[in-house]
Image 1 (cartoon, one colour):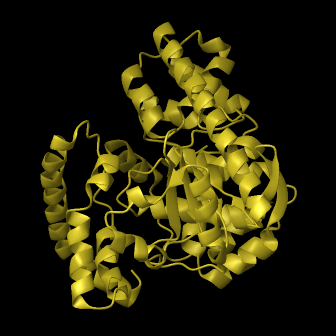
Image 2 (cartoon, helix red, strand yellow):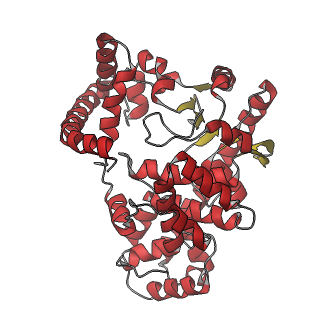
Image 3 (cartoon, rainbow, N blue to C red):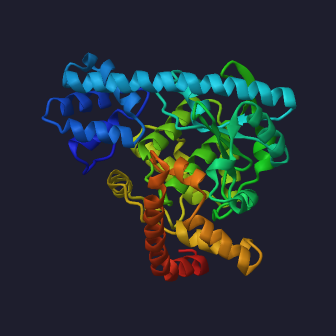
Length: 410
């Protein structure tokens, strides 16, 4: 374990962000627990980072949490069981969807949380999930929509306008569906990277490499371990470089646990070669290097040296601090958004699209914001207008940096 300049509270969160606690890490945790700690900060950050159930689980294992204030342990225990209950409902929905898709002949790969919680973590209460991610083939999208509609899921209410829905496959690699009553969110993917991503992978190879697995009691498909590890690293990179405050502890923990789980079967030679073929060495190196240094991932010695590039300056502590502060002024997400307008033909359609983003439908506003009655919608329209003006100015400020990166790759 490398030397850290993080606070005791942050170190405690880091050390508890893993399934298996080594004796060395256990001693470090016990030493930290002997100090006076800011438990409000710790619990808040554990929630932000998506690790509160795992954090509770590990504190309970280490001397049954006796060095933790009883109220804190009770609070964390409630979060754990609340997450377990929620995930049980999600898996119940997942079982229904996989059954329906199977009957209709829709091949389905279960991605990220829903796969990891059951197959890797072996306890669905330990891995929070905000939604369920499923990968299908783009040709099956309309069939999937039909099946989900019959299961009382709807996608239309989450689009700002009907025009946005028409361009869903141009702008996105995913389409979320929301259950009309249960509010369960299912994200249907037909690729693992958005169109504006600087990286590309061959999704057909991912399908060819897919393996059979039983999830939620239904036989379905999973990504091959090599492809799964690439997906997790690319997903982490997308979050770090987006306007979303990333849950980096959860993401790095996922990467580390996958490397440990498949350490005897993962084909590292194929993993390295395909990463080079896709030219994704930088995000792969970043994800693996930090998971190796800070989360005790299992990475063969030669793998990182094979992947290392000139752009490998990694600042985990800086990334972590930004995530804790909820810094939303991340790199070039809005530049990418504006640049993607060129995919829409015609000035009039572009204008309607932009206007629809600023002033979307009432249904979208009610879904997107905590609106309790329709009168509040107009207030949130003003808030949304202010947000877009802010990001418009931010985009103008970022434009020179974006052009330099696009031209020189820096």
